[in-house]
Image (cartoon, rainbow, N blue to C red):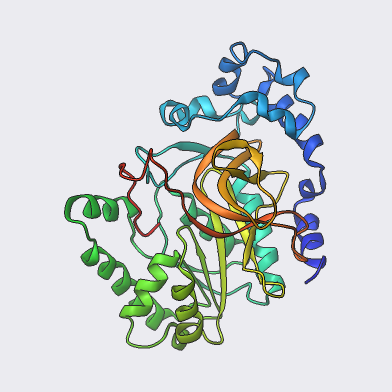
Length: 362
């Protein structure tokens, strides 16, 4: 797939061929022009201390915005986030999982369609696109379930969805310290659908894939799946090895790293002795691995740091958001000609080590 995969993605989503600096300037014009920008960003323009339309000449200049405070997004009205340039077009409101507090809301007009086209290209390159899909994923206000539905719609596949509220899992963890009963409820639904419908693809999270593997009477590979696609939380190396060796023999396992705010960083297979790395397609978003003591200094390839994300979509502009993850910076991969991240772990510091963060199954 060397080089060919990225070219195929560009054919499906031509914006991927746009240089990052040019795209940044385009997004400044979109988000800060009165005719197309959102009330959220237009209302902040006068207080920025600089003019995004004239002072942002490229991606590096986004440092002028400083670090983005996620609390601003939590307080924002979804209507205020909708760009005026999308006036008259249908849109949906998605919410984050609320791991570190109340959820953030964002709007989707065109982003999900691009995500579907990019991901379908990856599935086709690995020979597993098509067929019916089992979604053991959050639904409702969460983008993940809607993404899976859009993907299956792109090839007219059926979607069998598990009734799944990830916030109930977090409520159980906060109240009782465990959520085994709810996890068993999700696994029981999934086992019924795996047996009765024999789907081609299973979408879920790594945490739930592990729970499924531990509770099913047979290995996951025994249910006729061609691929398992995961996203959200991460596995330890030992857990990943167990899944590959004991549960998924003969089944493609395609993982992503990301969230509702930044999108899907696609997993690439190791080259030589390197770890599996995740690559987020620019110019829509950029992951930067930074020095824990200086969020503006990018660490060298091979070093670990805290992830800083910038989202540059027509639907959503978020500059310089410090994520709750640490990772090792990797260089470009033969499949993806841009830097990536590897060995992703939850970020811990003095400020959140004993805070209200609750990791569930999402």
